[in-house]
Length: 375
Image 1 (cartoon, rainbow, N blue to C red):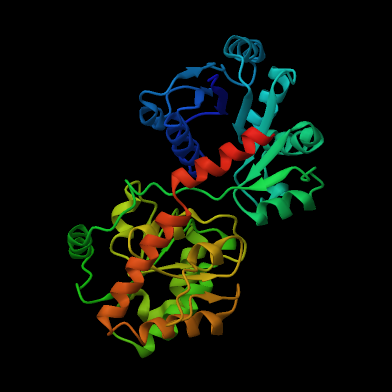
Image 2 (image 1 turned 180 degrees about the vertical axis):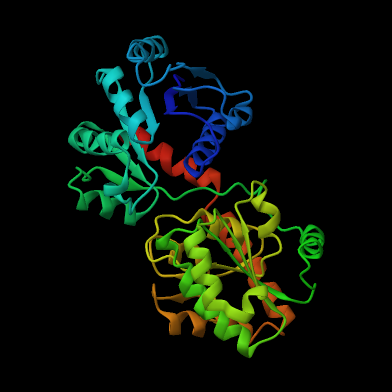
């Protein structure tokens, strides 16, 4: 049987959410007997290249913005490999794949974000954004990781009639429950073992609404003991100062730890994963923490409600964005059952199984492959 040949293309394999999804997809596609893949990047040396062991890989070695001959080299790669399909990630690689292929094979674009602040983009990012919009009718299909992303690009007048949603996959070999490691990390962070840990994993961006969580945390900490809040993500000094001012004397119970490379270790000590964003696409942090054994409480935006919903009815897991009272209601509903150890344990197990069943790399691969074949 002739194999279905796919060229997977991305700018580079440096650390990033889109890049991790790209690698997970490549690993899953490589296991499909009827599929042949080749991974192609513009730039080499990315740390995630090590995860492509055993997968055919080629780098075009683009030499900066002044290197225009890279399109000829990319064209040669495409001509020699002769794929049935090019599936590219990110705006620049989407455009370059379209131009270099001369439409001699099917082209599928991958959109991995939404709610972009277009006005604040750099000159070249803005150029790619609007050029991609102009050429969007020429893509055979567009794959987004959320319905919110489709709505966002429609608002900017992209041609999205051929767009489809494939949710992200979660690497359960990296994100999994490990209670002994969680206990050790709590000890290192000076968190008593019996404390209930509410965790947030998001960069300090205005859309993540850290001040809302700080206001809710202050009220919760006034009423309940043996609780700590932990925040992971790149720190914005202005937002941090605002949150610290809101927390006041309760600041010592809210740990702002900054960005962490070994974030999976920190997820394992979360009893609850929080998301207070008021815009979102597909939140990897919610799903990754759930795979690590955290119970979710999330704002209702993007795909968060879908990720967090495993038909739990013993507490409130969802609240409206920017709704302080709704967030407080959800937090208190979970705290009121925390002494029921069997119930809490059951919720953690259900969270893990929900992610394994609905957001596995294999499921992402199967849904992606179906779209690619039908393009």
